[in-house]
Length: 166
Image (tube, rainbow, N blue to C red; front, side):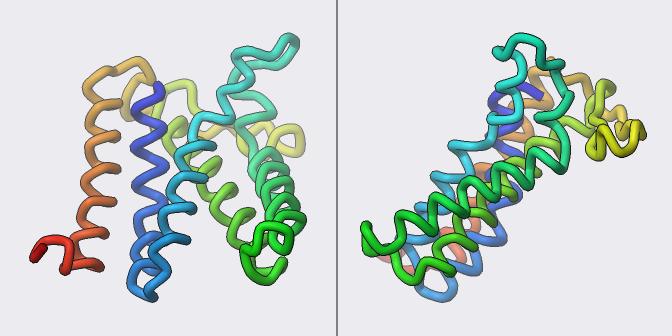
C-alpha cells in the first residue's frame, strides 16, 4: 500500500486500543498512543531508502516488528522517570506494544497486495498474500485511510459524548 493506506491501517488497528484507553479515562495517553502509531506506520518502507536492503524483505518481517517494539519499549523505560511518564515497566510495555501494533498494521496492509510479505524470513520462505488489491490502487488506499479515520472518529464519539453536547 501507499502512505494513506498505511496510515489508515494504523488508525484501524489502533482504534480498539484507543477505545480502551478513552473508556478508562486515559485521554492524554490515548492521544500519545495514536501519535506513536501514526509516526511508525510507514517505518517498514524505510527499506526503499536503504542500500542493499530489499523492499519487503527484512523490514517486513515479524523480527522487525519485535525489534521496533523492543527499541521503543526500551526508550519508554529510559524516559519514564526523567519525563515523569509513570512506572518504567508500564511505560515500556505501552510504548513497545503500540510500536509493535503499528508495524504489524503495515504488514497487514501489505499482505492484501499481490506482492505480499514473507513474515518469517529467513526461517521460512513462505510468502503470504491475499492478492486483493494492488499497492498502487488509489481508491483502495483512500478507502483504507477513510476507514481508519472513521474508526477513530467513532471511538472518540462513543467514548467522549460530552464533546458532541458542547
